[in-house]
Image 1: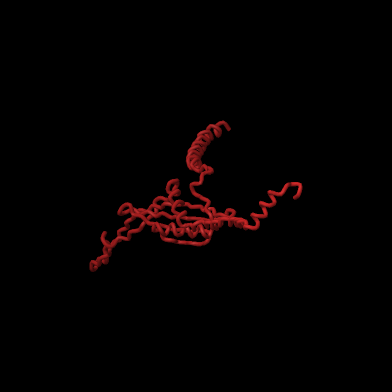
Image 2: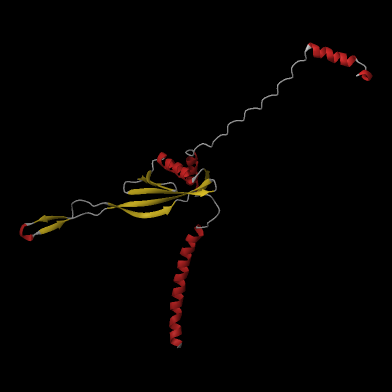
Length: 210
């Protein structure tokens, strides 16, 4: 029994070390997911969700994005970039629109995918009489793009510019018509000569005879 216990100690230590390493790797990712109350990925806009998603679709089109999907509650578009000859990047934006009272809540998330060119040379077979065919290292290249990275864009400035542009495609708020000013009361008609004379007589008559 003592011999077994002594041998189990190194094994337990190794398991604990691996668990600790895995925990640190997981914690580093979880720390970045704070789920705070910021509005980086969402905004509230006036109008129904369908109207907000249409504004989002127009926003993407205005910046050269290809629309992959568009509906009353969701829009998706992508745009391609080539920073280097053998590198390719694609930016995919996904927008969701949900009701919030008499307004719409717009969520947006951008994913950046990176691709690298992978070259696969194809050998060519050449016939050599009785020897049959021999493969030589030349011929066509079957090049292909391989995804090497994918990450969610977390730049707050990027999303702020998106929402600022989206505001430009929302219908202008209805401006209430100005209320016409109230009509002025008609001025009193000037007293006639008879009324003026009668008023003078009344004023000259003693109070006791009135």
